[in-house]
Length: 485
Image (cartoon, rainbow, N blue to C red; front, side, top):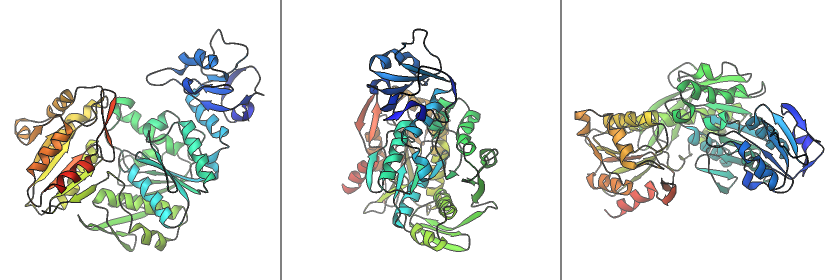
């Protein structure tokens, strides 16, 4: 139980109706979770406006309502706090409610279009292998040391986020590694948090259905670096065109990493194949089981973050050499005939191109590269034809299929992808609406030594169709098919 006056510390307030000397037992922006002595924050969302649920929250026992507009019929027995930005207020109030957990932890947040999950997961595994107690907040899973907590969002809502951080403190964690999505940053889910370090991977075409334009998407990512204090560090990819934009207004200590440009942390790929990477980091050589140049970037930024956190160089390199990729990130299996299947989360044009270029670089030239790919429903439609074009450009055969169609018709999504192909390109592509059947068809095409890429869903264990999530696992399915050979 906390006093309202303490929860409002650092919140920009326009006016208060009632006393701030009242007790609060829980904080929520979901009216369904309101109970007696709750503080309800009315947040304007993309689909619904929390202000529409103020009456319901009051009826369920809310003691305090934080909102941007106080209702004309506001009841006298409830305290109303008017703020300019209720989403930002929610983040600060949630942090205060859990005694500012982020200030007691060393938190490294990763943002960018591609590489967030791999980078955050590698950092978590690296620090766990070195004996530290730490937490992970990622698209795939949340972890508190070895305790696994299912992830529902790339970055949790503000209340859940601070609650998880508080649990991590209780479990003795000192470090936390997390993904910072553009949605979360734009929606102020990380407001009120203290970030020790921020890492930037890259930016490419994604989430324009939400942000509207690349400009707005970039601005959302930039929020992470704008919120850093002078005591923090910011590590950005010097090979990426937007690196200067990201850190243009940051107060943090600026550091860069790169494979092809001058940088504070410089790397170089010596060899890359299906057996892993041989690369230089500074003056030291590193062998890793991870595959491809994109993973060289991930390893390099992980190394940079660890050094900025004060860890010994050789200790980092020794442990980094044994790190495996997260589930669904260039996860591969080989059958008895030497064919290889790769399952990857690549669901953006840039990510798909990176994976396909990596596979192309390790080919001998005698094998086929077959790609199974789809695009999610209710998401950015502009990338659909581009994804098909990239798949056809770098593959011998392509099967266009369903991803998570959500509320859209799978066939219509596939048709929008195929619309990006010319007559000649269409000869290399086949449309199979059912994803299970599509993977089965691709498997039947494989000759000994061929490579199959199954892109788009990666770690996901479901397929969402018309609001229902059906059990579906790309890697499990291809493993079963390989075992039937």
